[in-house]
Structures are given as structure tokens and as C-alpha cells.
Image (cartoon, rainbow, N blue to C red; front, side, top):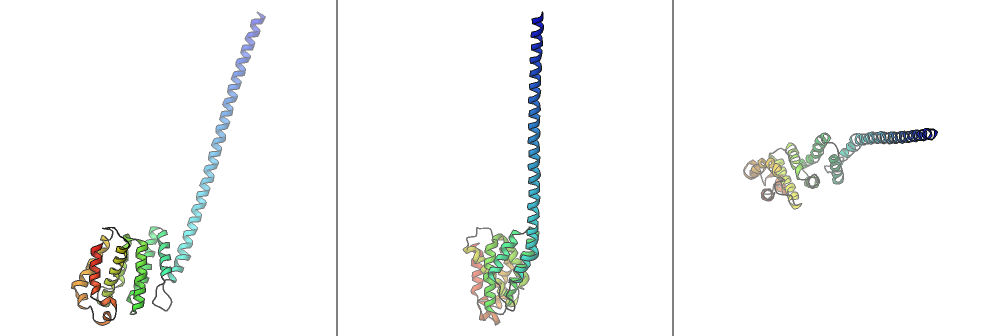
Length: 238
């Protein structure tokens, strides 16, 4: 009877040990899970803090671009006291504008284009030629999808009558030619061509055509009849 009782106690002790070991394993597993959860929470908090810091840096950088860099470039776009656009400044300004939010671009881009297009009203051939070259570089930098914006600015700055009508047609032909030489895909300039049709019609059949070769236009390439042919050729190539 004593041996049986002893075996029973040993068996009970063994079961108790197993239960204690199992409980210890469960406690260790809970502690490990708690530690992992704490690590994940710490990592998430660090990532959130980093993202907030990056957002703060991005916001500060954008504010600096809008309040300092952009106005500085705009102020240097045209040479003081001269009707000449600075091509490197213009391209740098356009590249900067493309990096800014869309709502800022909608305001800054037409402002930049208007400053350059205004030089096309100059009576100096050299100023107009330089402005056209800069606009051509800008048009290629922006891509064909921005041509309607450029054309709308040109039409707003250059009245479609008299000398400026000749300038408008000649400049539009040059921009189309630049895109054609750059390998524009068919259909990419359809919206721009639709805006240019009134100018094309006036240059071919309206009073603009009747005024070709008289006055100021006679002394420069803008007033030549070949500009109308170039316009038609480039329009048909797009």
C-alpha cells in the first residue's frame, strides 16, 4: 500500500511539473508576442515620425521655392532695360514650374509664357527672333500637350490684326515646326491646331493676308508670304 501511494504521489508530482512547464512555455510565448508587438509599435511610431518630418521638409522646400526661388527666376527672365529673354533662366523656370503642384503651375506657367510672348511685340527683329527661339525651347521642354496653353497665351498677347497677326502666325509656324522636327506623334497637336485655325484662315484669306508685305512686315521674315506656306505645311505634318 505504501508503494502504491508513493507511485501515486510521484505521478501527481510529474503531472504538476508538466503543467508548470506548459504554463511557463505559455508565459514565455506571451512575453515574446508582447515584445514583438512593442517593437512593431515602436517601428510604426518611428516611421510615422519620419514621414511627418519628411512632410515638414517637403513643405518647407516647397515654400522656399514659391517664395524665394520662383520670384527670383521670374525677375531675371528678361534683361533689365532690354527686350531680350534669358534662355537659360526661362528653361530653368519652366523645369521648376513642372515640379510644383498643379494649382501653382496653372498660375506660374502662363505668367512666364506671357513675359516671353510680350517680347514678340518688339519692333526689333533680334528681340522677336530671340523670343521665338526661347518659346521653341520651352515648347519642346513642356511637350506637345502644353501647346494649347502656349497658343492661348500667344493669342492673348498678340492681337490677331495688323503687325502682331503676322508675328502670331509666324511664331505658331515655328513652334509647329519644332515639334515636327522633334518627332511628334500624329494627333498630339490636334487641340493646338484647332486653336490655330482662325489664325491660319486669317493669314491665308483675311485682312492679314492683304497686309502682307506692307510696312514693318516687309523688312523682316514675319511679313513674307512664305510664312503662310510654312504654316500650312507644318499643320499638315502634325
